[in-house]
Image (cartoon, rainbow, N blue to C red; front, side, top):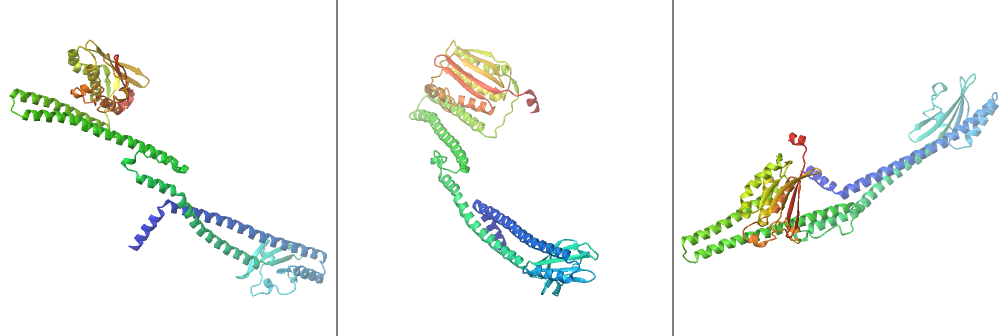
Length: 478
């Protein structure tokens, strides 16, 4: 249980962005310090080795010159060798010539020759000109040898103590390790403070978002001074708030409109029922009351159907079956349905449609029916309602025009709003629900198209339905 708790605690701690930034900052700092320290250590060690190598090389040259000058004078060679060995402390020189062995060496104790672990390299086993030799764990030397041709051959050996250098490098390594540890601790502390300070705007943004509610959707967060990394997030969040505010206001208006529209027929039904029940009436009076109630029931039923359709149409996963239809046949079917109404009103219906359109047949007829119904109600006797098609790049347009009363300019921006009716008297008389054009717009959005309306008061109205043209092979694949 404790292990599980520890793992959960570690996971919770490392899930913090500030902690992650701190760990990465500390790791990077340690790596950089370690890399820089290692490079400096290598350079220092190499410089010390080169200095020792130069000393050894100069001693070999001096002894070589002495051999050349005193080729037959062993005493002079020994004197020269002792003199060269005594000039620098920690330098040891000896000359070996088989079978005589060592013919010259420095004065005093030579740890490489006189210690319990004597130097055993011979000219026959020399593979390198320079190598390291260790007598004890803390007794280090650098040895250089120079074989000389002759009969017999001669080898000059020169060694220098590197114990102090090794101790100096060991201290340097300890200091480097200590510095790296201190830097790690300082990097963790400073990195965490820096990360926490850098994350303050995020905490501030989270606090602002947490304070937002339905009554604060008008608030905007991008107006404050944010770092560059959060500016885009704040701007996107403001756009989200704008969309939420629009949707919330639309839902609020929609709910208010529904309540208002449902209240009117309910009040009518209740008022007529109260009047009918206020005293005894004849069967004809009761029949009239029931007929009026049936009209209101029908209006309520149409309104509920329209609202359900709009609700389903606004679902994000709504999909349509859009076969390729003959627009003239579809328009003719709708005109045939409204022909009786047109004859009663004395309005002519003209079908000039042609071409194919990719649309759902039921929804297309519903949209055209809503447009024809509105056009017929607003066109006086002797007028005309025509339907024609036009081909635009990647679009097929179905255009419904009438010669009716038109729409006032102040009403044009609102004609597609739900429950909006420019002629309130018609709405009160039960001739509409104010949802017809809103349904047309939803149908066009489902098809990926657009609806546009142009009208001039007293001259008539033109509504254009623009459907995307879908390639035949694309339709065949469906």
